[in-house]
Image 1: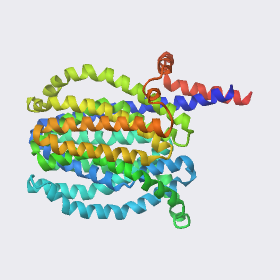
Image 2: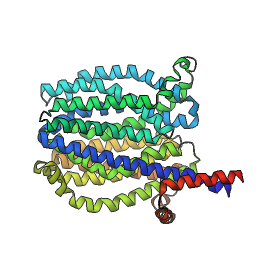
Image 3: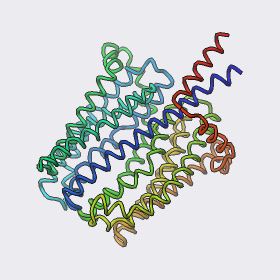
Image 4: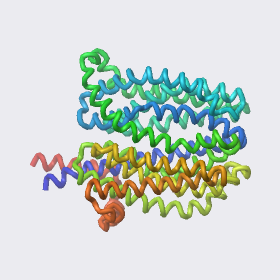
Length: 461
């Protein structure tokens, strides 16, 4: 009896954290959408494309240069939380030379990829990328530290603060009628630096407490880097998969196409807020659990999220075209069909990443590497076949087909490796009972405190 009572706080904690992170994602999506509306209205499709081209590179390159360290940090902290300061310090120490190398490559590589853009855009992109890559790498480590230690309030607040500050700066420049692409980039950089400073202040104890011990405990970092290199393949392929569409646009299409695509792509991501929250929360929560528990929790999160998001997406897609024209202007209606494809891809792709959490949590990231390799090969092939034929529509279709490949391979892998029948991952009649129970609970956040109190009372008597 005591064991049954003691389990509930952890289960409630996962649900509450997902709810909190989902709310943060919704707020971030709202702020990002407002930002996109302002920049689209001010700059038009071509100017929006130039801005998106500049902002794209730091996110892409930092994703390639992370070497799996954030995910490895979460995984290892769950096994040995006392070593967190060492893990953070060693991650920073490794990322400094990585940032320098990435900066040099970016400086000479960006002009090649942006050959169709103006000289001023190329210059801005070079300086912005070189400056932002180390900042984004450091923030990735601090975000992982917050997730690994269950400080999701810091994690979510920091994610919300950057776009909020960026929006506030853009609004001020817009009202003053001095908003330009160059100044929008400066606002983005200043906002990110401020958030990194806040992150370091919030995590200062973990960052600075190990400086004197770093040399003496260098062996501790072996665990961090060994797992990081194993999971890096997953994250490298994930980054390529999520960003290769932009690379194709930069190489084959026009700045106007990039502007149209950046608007509808960002708008389609609103359907992924819950699944993204689940992915961000479920891995730190289930890492270290037994296989049966991991598969049970990940499977339930996958099934419920797919059902809920499918219910939401159907009416939303019907009115999506209306809102594109209303919010961004008639110029962007040209890409409304692509919005439908990307919305479907968002749901399917989000579900596949929830399933990936099970393999990472059980120490089998290599399975996801194989999945990503095959899905990426299929998607890239379709990019080059369909994009020249159908433009942005071909791009969206290629992404959608690739996301189906990822999900199918994940389900097959669960069945083969963990001996769980595929139909159990797709359907479980207990899910409805679970949802009804949660619906009857008037306040999820108070529920966890009640269960903790019951567990304590039980232990005392």
